[in-house]
Image (cartoon, rainbow, N blue to C red; front, side, top):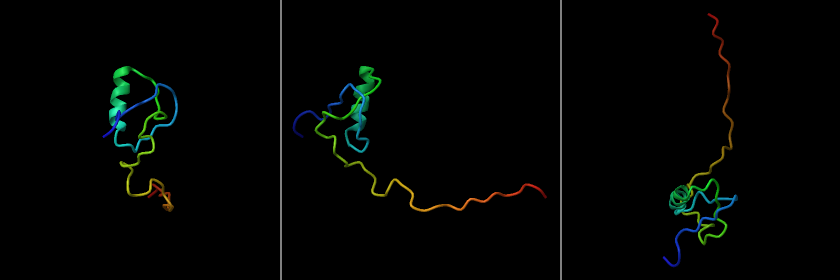
Length: 71
C-alpha cells in the first residue's frame, strides 16, 4: 500500500463508513480526543470495499394490525 493508510481531518463533514480503514481512523480519532472528524483529505474517502452487498433501504411495506385485548 502506498502512502499513509489513514488521514482523518479534524473538522465536521462526511465520513465514509464503508471504507475498510474506518475503524482504524475511528481509533486514531478517539486517541486524539476529537469530537468530530471527516474523510475529506483521505485518499480512501471513496473506497466502498466494506459496503454490504444488499440494499440498505426497504422497498416494501409490512402490514400493521391492531389486536383487541378484550375477551
